[in-house]
Image (cartoon, rainbow, N blue to C red; front, top):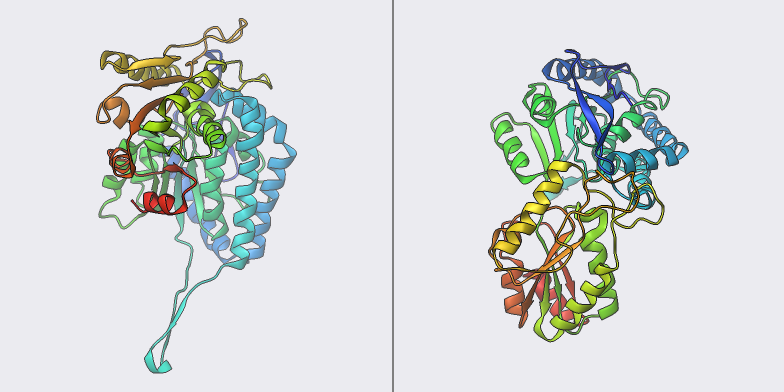
Amino acid sequence: MDILNWIGNRHQPAARGAWLENIEPATGKVYGRIPRSGAEDVAAAVAAAQAAFPAWSAMHVDQRSACIERLADAVRRNFELLVEAESRDNGKPVQVARHVDIPRAEKNLRFFATAVQHFVTESHVTAGATHIHYVHRKPLGVVGVISPWNLPLYLFTWKLAPALAMGNCVVAKPSEVTPASAYLLSQWIEEAGFPPGVFNIVHGLGAEAGEAIVQHPDIKAISFTGGTATGTHIARAVAGTQKKICLELGGKNPGILFADCDFDRALQTTLQSAFANQGQICLCASRILIEDALYERFRDALVAKVRTWEVGDPSLPGTRLGAVSSRAHQEKILSYIQLARELGGTILCGGHAAVPAGDRCAEGFFVAPTIIEGLDPLCAVNQEEIFGPVITLQRFKGEAEALELANATEYGLACTIWTENLGKAHRMAAG
């Protein structure tokens, strides 16, 4: 598969003719090429978007909505093609792409296509009713979208759909690790009725194409999902430019389990929230905090379940755990597991690279689901985002200690609380 940029409703390679290899994580083999785009390609996309903006922003909202709905129709028509492409490109099990990624991508498009038709703004009446102040929201112009590799089309559409619906023109860069579904989407943009230049897709490296989007003076807003270090760099880069930014970054999320929880539901959901998509979701619970009275029972049940899980070829319908996104990411995950050993942690299960049955995936990037206990709450394994199928267990004696452990990290993205006591749940959530 030779992936191409989409600029001004035309597919084209990078201006300099450079390419990147596209590697299938499950096999470790190259199966295509990606344009290694740079500032010239981004400039061409911005120019096309600027030319399209006056007409697109002035277009009746029903017409813009109809374009987005037709794009959603194309996603539905090509559902199985997208499922297969997402699984192959990312390494996720095909059943995850079928039940999560591609359905949600369609829903994102449809939600914003209809939401924009019911847009509500605010007005404020002064004392004495002598004046009315009202808010008039207008499109910004050309906006930049930079999306991650873990939920490729899901998060790509979540960003671009509201931008397009509100009358902005988009220059979007999907992750260079998982570009296939965005490329497929580009094949249906023109037939969906988008005028040339409204929706542009530029492929390439974050430090090159992504940086060019961030730095371009005519891009009025940046929406980025990805690593915290990159998000911090973007925030610094646009400081003083008055560009709007929307950043959704890393997490080191606690799952807090009290002894009075619904045990079976807590167990099942913790398994899902820890290891879904090979743990490569920013909302995954990676630090499981368990009350003393429940600790041994819950730990043993969790480990027993995970020991029955095996990584498998993500293209097979019965696979629960697929490959991680790349060799570099596999090595990063394994380095944290090794660090846990060096710090005195106990590997209760997993803890190694894994190879699925059969020859096809013998060189793929797989990590066995791993559970670790006995680590200091402030060690790197408990503080830094691993973003893989690795969780740690910690015990606590009461609400105060649970809160202290939960908050003992620089991240504050998400938390789950398991208790049947409503008052306790509210206290913990507030804390």
